Image (cartoon, rainbow, N blue to C red):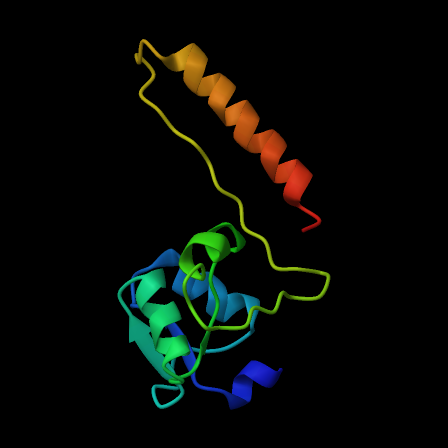
Length: 116
């Protein structure tokens, strides 16, 4: 609700995370005055650091994107927004077994960090 009254910085049109962020916050992209676009997560964080507005970034990007920035971080209260990702590889890949194991590690990491 509070985001409705702030300038929201989002990735450019066409990025799936932009659409997801708008959906998570129940906002529409037809408010051009309150929305500004950035080409990357790093750009968005730099814009926040410059005082231009606020942004949403994936949890997994927070440590990297905010490591040298003077921004504050707030997390959503439960129920937290989430998204589903998938890992794909070529059926005939000689690394199919290893890739399947990597997918299992990613799946387990997601389960372990779901409550973060």
